[in-house]
Amino acid sequence: GEDHGVQHLPRMAHNNAHIRRKERCAATRRVCLLLVFGSSLFWSSNAFQSNRQCFAPTTTSRRNRTVLSESLLSSDSRPNILTDAVYDTILSGRIAVIPNFLPKNVVADLRSDATNLYRSGHFSADALAAYGTESSTKFDPTKDRTVLKLDQWKRTDIGNVRLRHETFGTIMKNLRTDLAKQLNRPALDRGISTTAYGNGSTEISYTRFGPGAFLKRHIDEHHEELKGKRGWEKPTRRSVSWLVYLNEDDWDPELHGGSIRSFQRRFPPSTHVGAQSNGDLQIGWLRATSGDQVERPVFLDARIVNDNGNCAMYTVASNNIRGKTQEDAPQYISHNFHPDPVLFMSGGDFFARRLLIDNPALAPRFHFLEPPKSAATKLLGSTATPSDPNDDEEAMNIPPLGGTLVLFDSVSLPHEVLPANGRERWATSGWFHEDQQPPPLHYHPI
Image (cartoon, rainbow, N blue to C red):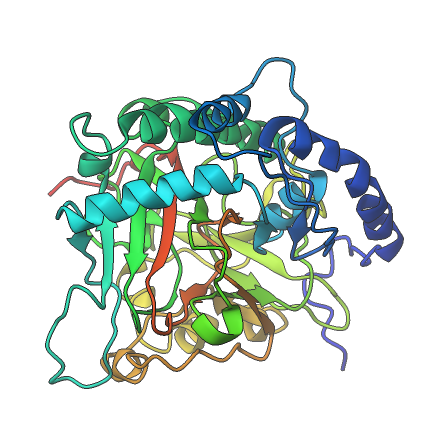
């Protein structure tokens, strides 16, 4: 028989006409980019547009470069910085790409600052990345991923402080305010996330991938209960991941590689991904079926007071991507359970379907965003070979062209960084945070 899944949930047809209307409107909205960021090109994974009218100064004099930088900082009476298609792309769990977000001279100034700070020893090696496939390969910091971490970024006695803190920091602060409004995530622009860390972004850094360095498939943020005993200790959590590439104009994606590869769902989601307004984070999906032709995000409620467990998984009935209306009541798909050991077992999908979900129509549809990996899986994933998408995913490679801004939801989108071939790969990157929800009653600090 046909699998109708959650039969009481309304179905959302894939409205192609609505998408086409959005794409036609995008050309008009690009005026916002011209006014604020000097860019007339928009590209997202939902709407590909390429008119390649790149803004560039007519002279390279220092005076004109300064004026151009200041023109990027305007926040008075401005329209939305980005287009509706970009916001919808993020909320749908896909990757949004905005070429020429920064003019070439600003990209060059940031790259110069980054390279000077790297040469003077202010970068630190990042153990998450790798460049060798042999266990006997000795560590070489010139080949691995190194980062100008936040404590160095914030220093006022090194590098181009005005560029990092005032020019670029203000641009990212304005972007954060825009995303908070348009993604309906007001916590992005208030609280500890905006005051206790870097100017413009909670986490902000320069990153350098040496020749051959790569970063395997991962997700940037996880539910507190998936982080172990200390999962509730942090005051904030990642919400939106971002990076701006700082590579030279002659970067050839086919020759030099270094793309970021995202693993996106083949079918559209029923509602916005990542988190609910109450702070519950997404941990999985209900796959689309012939009877329910959307992907349904699955969230984890960790505030249940019950002897049988403090956690339960749920989805919502709404077919509403933008999340501008009040969220529907949760529709629980599992019984109550204790997170340990169920959420930490290798082969997590199998055990979750067997142990947690009683509905035989829903159990086969469930899978985690990223199941726990065994030691063998981690070993097999230690090579530079690009990961293949799962059957219900599609891979998308984003070339690291200078000035390009990349945005995506930190919780829901698996991604990896492919090796850079024969040259350094430069970027500035970070995460916009939201304050973490208060710890549940069952949590006891260690």
